[in-house]
Amino acid sequence: MNDQTASAVGLEIRAISADDAFPLRRHHLRPGLPPEASRYAGDDHPAAFHLGAFSGDEELVGVVSFFPGTEQGEVETAVYQLQGMVTRPTMRNASIGTRLVQEGITRLIAMGVVRVWCDGRTPARSFYERLGFHSVGEEFVTPATGPHYRFVRDLA
Image (cartoon, rainbow, N blue to C red; front, side, top):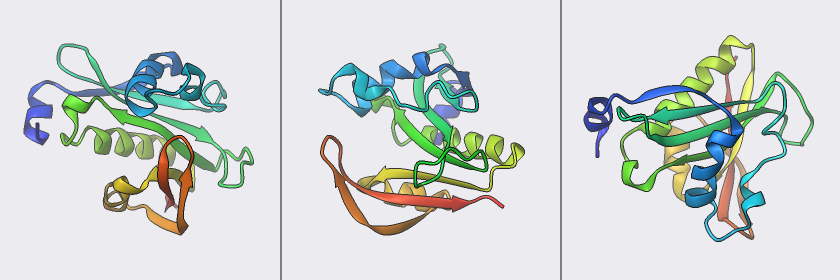
């Protein structure tokens, strides 16, 4: 599938709940792990938001979440973390992830957020770089999900 196909199916990005995001996270982002591994501490924070990409037939095909907090774990509403981004495997390479992140960044800028960061999987490095993020520090490995880099993008 390509960008034209994603547009043809009437892709729409809109706000969803953390509970709406959970099934895609669980089945496609963290398969084989206990269900609670797909719930994040920031999911229910009052300033958190979650976005979903819906196909023309209203199927949820991608999700992403944004939580207030610095890279050091401090809750800071001028800095947000991107987490839990996943696209249904049959819909990958259709710019759905790009559209989800771009919509999130648009909302963050409107909120006055100055920086967004994430711990992204190493194979997704070029994806984050295309979106204006840069890696900081060395590659690291998380036991359940493999090699990652920390990515940061300044918004102000």
